[in-house]
Length: 206
Image (tube, rainbow, N blue to C red; front, side, top):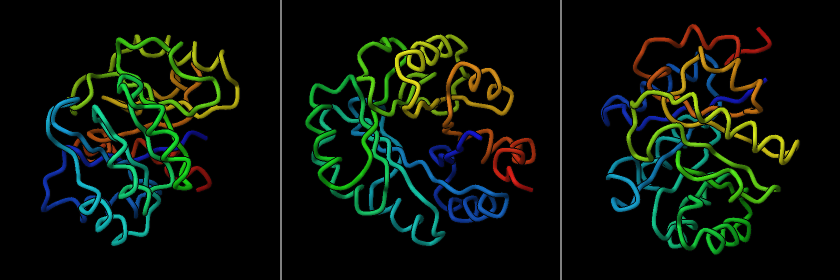
């Protein structure tokens, strides 16, 4: 069964804790925290301290997605409460960031933007495929990303492969067939009132 990580990028600050608790009651078990440096992607997302407070308030597992030209200086703060930290392959210092993530005892992952080819990702690394331009939450899912997912899965049968950007429940079956096993979902969980259509994934044993 694929895993869903909830992204609160588009949820207003005063509504975030309530939104998480509502989704937690529906079966959500993982939070996805986005951070940008305002250069690699437009300003938005969360600081590590903001994400830590909300994560601790709910007790859910957490992962971080750092959209920064140089993510290395941000690793330590996020590693305090995230088990997975994703940085971008388009960052010139992604390899140094991955080494730091591993040194901090977390799982490293590489995100790739829509125009970045699958071949840049080492076969032994978790990868998060962006269907939209980083930092443009709420944009529509681009089906072309499924070809990239297939290429990544063909290169490695073992690694974790995720999709991020405009993901809706109706995309899941085709994405799983392509090889995805991890979905970052924001709008369709938190803003579209579509939680009920995710029930079979959020609560697979009910």
